[in-house]
Amino acid sequence: MPNSYRSDALDALRNAAETDRHKALASLKIMLHHPAGIGDHSTTDLHDNLNEALQQLVDADDRLETLRKYFKELTNG
Image (cartoon, rainbow, N blue to C red; front, side, top):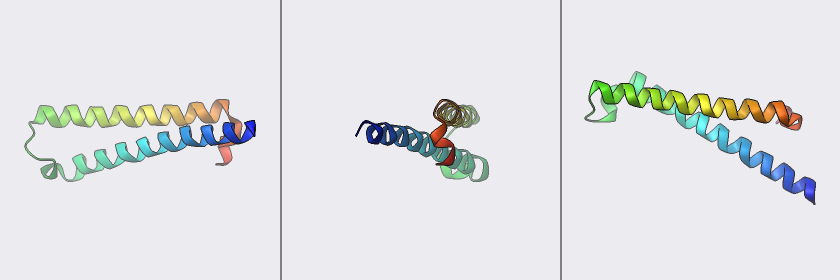
């Protein structure tokens, strides 16, 4: 039973990081390819939003890499 919890917890962490990664990539694609679709924003707002999405992507990638580094069973998942 403890291995099941460990596996479930690691899967949840990986899934959350992957979801955050996809959300950040989607935000970047929208802002880079369709900036008119994001509404009434100044250029400063756009750049701030781009940087925020990039930071979210970096954070998600770092989390995934850390999970793979310390929990080898996730490298195949």
